[in-house]
Image (cartoon, rainbow, N blue to C red; front, side):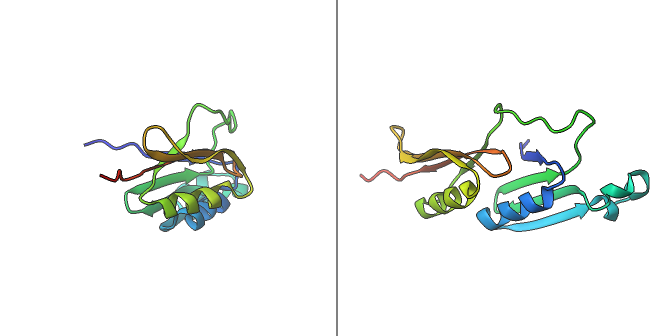
Length: 139
């Protein structure tokens, strides 16, 4: 079975961003620099501390990141959002508060007509996040 994971690209601040996401979402973070890789000799010396690849794992959540930007540079757009399906009301509120710190809380968390708590934000790195918690219906 195939799986899609989010892979974020940064402009030299991947370590800072992925550490921030770990603080917000929890989990285990691994980082590999260009200097630690077999590519080190082929890359400019100034790139040795750049993140070649990073992984943040927390249960089924897998967020990937890198500082490896193509020649065209980093182009941010609003066509992609990172959506987290949260496991509890406490978790969605905690994630929203932490991820929006230093960013912009564009759509505050609120109860929806489809039975969820839902909200959206742009974090301090310019990435768009959607958070959703499906509330249990009382019968």
